[in-house]
Picture 1 (cartoon, helix red, strand yellow):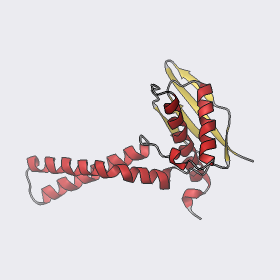
Picture 2 (spheres, helix red, strand yellow; picture 1 turned 135 degrees about the vertical axis):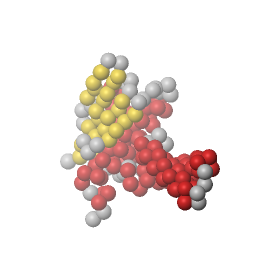
Picture 3 (cartoon, helix red, strand yellow; picture 1 turned 30 degrees about the vertical axis):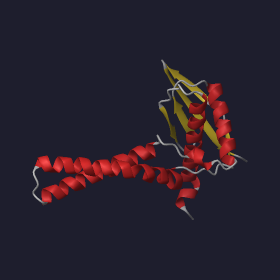
Picture 4 (tube, helix red, strand yellow; picture 1 turned 90 degrees about the vertical axis):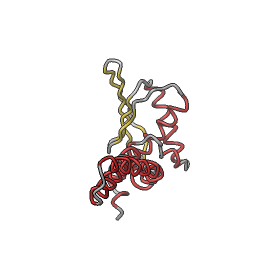
Length: 171
């Protein structure tokens, strides 16, 4: 059995896909909307930012419908944390590797720094397609045919708005 497509991990991946699709739809409908972001877990996902609950509910329903109709591209988002982690990891490893090679060759610190910056920059460029591929194959799952929306809850924390969007298995 494929571990990514079973139980807990399957649910988190599906919820992550619906989160991305929902954010994409919300941003398309409200270009000036300043969402802070989202986070998925095994129960559903959170949306952080000043969005109306009714607008969020409508966007989630549309996201589910469109994903179920085969619009898998909605599950992939360019500002996903997967991309940020991929970029940070590759850039850090590249910079450390360049610095280690410089130390091994007994290069001066002034020679190691530009090499580390160049290596990190190359890693940042390479990381974009890698992060998107990781989203497609590991951190999201656009097959959401077995999900439906539960009751969204909203918390106002001063000017900060937090919604929890529960996604439930269809019986």
